[in-house]
Length: 117
Image 1: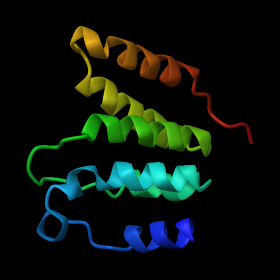
Image 2: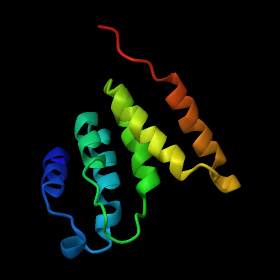
Image 3: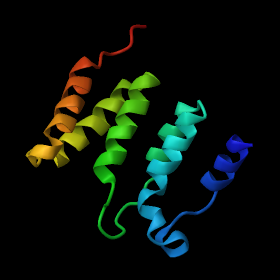
């Protein structure tokens, strides 16, 4: 019943007022759970339902990278490109520990091609 439980969790209003600190990482967690259950479309929706203009945007870069990956897997080239470009803006001059992550996203962005037809 994992799918039903994840769907029920995903239906909750995970805002800072209702979920506190969990609202910062809930979209990324839900995306990963949906993906593990074989539903990358629901994972993509979860990454795009992140909170905006609420406190410090913790996990924002990680969520953008995940959004790009799910969008690319689903053929949403424009969405993947947008998410990857915003990620790279946040990681323009990363600490050495994050350069491999940034470089991997650059390669993924360069590999994106528009669908034919």
